Each structure stands twice: as structure tokens, then as C-alpha cells.
Image (cartoon, rainbow, N blue to C red; front, top):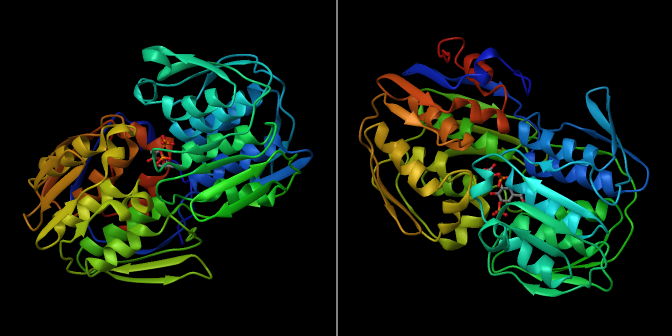
Length: 436
Ligand SMILES: O=C(O)C1=C[C@@H](OP(=O)(O)O)[C@@H](O)[C@H](O)C1
Ligand SMILES: C=C(OP(=O)(O)O)C(=O)O
């Protein structure tokens, strides 16, 4: 069994190379779920009392949430394998909040800052500073917060002057758990109830965990309502990240004679769409929901159509599913995925470019891509465009490519999965290693 978060020197390398084809077998645990880690720390910070949070993602994104809470005066200390968080935020942070590469941390903190009677500045790295923030700023302004930023208030750095919010009933134009979460967090301290309705159901971590911390949350279909309520401390043990398990699942399916088991994975609502999609492609995958186990074995995959309704539950898995599609027989069409254009990179463009670097036949459409599977993969040169998921997807594709693959921008992987390279080395029995 390979443990989560085994860092290696290669994690910090700007450029790596590896040579396929590789062999793959064994079992592992992936890092703690990133979405749940952000929320566990944040809600513990907002709650009255001390919470012990274990199993956290060791990636830089979650570290940014911890640092932002500390800027708000929250006491956070190591305790065994976890962190002990003593809840209680000051009205305003002592310094600008630098959220690094994390869209989730930024949007969730926008909601927290809006609910506090103080001033906060939110910023991040060059990729985050290009991502849209009006999707959260618009509803938070409607609740009474004053929010401004570059490009008509849409881009970081954002200045937020919060406090004295009024509850709203908001119809979100975008299916986004980050938008939903920002509004619910702001609603915690508003006068009156706050509701948000999404156009399609997204991951439910915020509403589920708010309840665990004593929040008054009601869910009616795709509409969530929060009553202003104090939170009280509770311990959280974060399960493994399904979005990271997806890389090893696809690797096991496309590498000949492979079998990989991932244990202790979160398999709750809105996160297992990649398993459904892969099964529709013919994949041999076993799931044991009671232990969070996913086992995948080499399978001949077939191309399918992946459309709008599938997208929210695979929103972060499209780059690795595209690798599976390129290895499949037949054509895969992905549509209704325009949200991918505003992730860490434009993931429609960067995924298609990555596939083409391996000799695959793929092209962009406005809201997705078309991949004609079956072309033999040959090693190529890939640029991650600063996007961890493109770098990891390229690494998996390299396992079935003839020759050497070079990946520029590998260091982005540390935002979510330090130790990915060590896990690959262990699963391949030392046969595939990344060289810096
Ligand atoms: O709420 C969350 O934790 C996340 C929601 C998704 O973003 P959107 O809400 O922008 O779709 C996802 O892409 C991101 O990695 C994590
Ligand atoms: C989109 C992602 O994260 P975030 O929006 O938090 O930067 C991701 O991890 O794929």
C-alpha cells in the first residue's frame, strides 16, 4: 500500500521527462479530498471551539486556505497527523489574502469576507488573477457587500468591504459549487434566510458539512437555504480525493495488463461521474462504496458522447477522461463544458493541445472537444499551462506512449497532489520514474 502525500524532489521541478510504455499494479491511497479539505478548515475556523481535522490534502491550494485563516487570526496547530483549529475570525485580516492558484479558496473566502464587518483584499497567482470573480461578487453585492476589482470588478485583486448583509434568494446562472458555497457562507451571518438555486446540481460538500457544524441548512432539489446560525466545532476526517483517484483509474484501464486499487476514496454525490462515464466506455471498474474502494483493470474502451448533464459531476476529470478517449476505439464528443474555459487554464484548449502532442486526433469546439480515438500514442512535448490536471493527465498518457515525453510546468502538480511522482514510481515497481 502506498501512502498519500509522499513528496519527492521531482515535485518542485519545472520540467520533467518520462519514458513509456510502463507497467502498473498495486494499491494506494490518494491525498485527502481538496474540496472537503478547504471546507473543513474554513468551517472549523468559523466555528465556536476546537476542531481536529485529519486526512487533509497536502497540496498548496489547501495550505492557502490555512494561511488565509491565520491572517484572520485563527489559531491552527499541528496535532498528530492533523491540524487543531481554534475557531474565531477577526473582523478583518492583517494582510492581503494570497490564495495562490486556488479558485475554491478565493470564492469561498469572498463569501466569508463579505459576511464580516471589515475590509479584505484577495489575490493570487497569474492564473487565478485571470479567472472570473463576478460570479460570486454579483450575488454578494446584492446581499450588501461592497466588492471591487480589476476589469469592472471581475478580476483579482478584489477588495471586499463586508458586514450587515441581507439574505437573498438567488438563481445562479452557472452550475458552480464555489458560487453556491460563497453565498451560503455569506448567508451564515446575514439577516434573514439566504437561498441559492443552481441550474444543475453540483457537489454538496458545503451544505453537508455546514450541517455537521450545526448550521441550519435546508435542501429542496437544486435549491439550498441557510438560516443565519452560529457554528460549533466538530472533528473531520477527510476521505481521499476522487478527482486524484481518477488519474490512477484511467492509467489502470489504458496500460496493458494493469490493475490498480485506490482505497478510502470519497464516493459521495457529484464526484463519481468519471466512474459512470468510464463504465459507459466499457471500463472494468469495481467500486465498494462502504470502504471507498475503486479497482480498475486494463480494458478496451469505446468512444461515447458526453453531454451537458454529465458535466458538473466530471468537471475536474475531463483532461484525464480525454486521455481515456484518445486510447479508446471510436469517437468521443464532449459538449456543454464551456466552464472548462475558466479553470486553472482554458482546459478545452490545453487538453486538446496535450492530446495532439501525443499524436492524437482531437479538436476543440466552442463548449467541448471531439477526440477520434485509437491513434498510437508517441512521446511528445506538453505544456501544462500552469494547470496541475493537464500535467497529471499528460503523465498518464505518457505511460502508453512510445518514446520519451517531456512535461513543462510540472511544478503545478504540487497545488493538489504532491507525491504523484512517488506514487507512479511505486505503482510501476520503479520501472517508470520522472526525471527532473
Ligand atoms: O467547490 C469546489 O470545491 C470545486 C468546485 C468546482 O468548481 P466550480 O464551482 O467553479 O465548478 C471544481 O472545478 C473545483 O475544482 C472545486
Ligand atoms: C478547478 C480546480 O480547482 P480550483 O477551482 O479550486 O482552482 C481543480 O482543482 O481542478
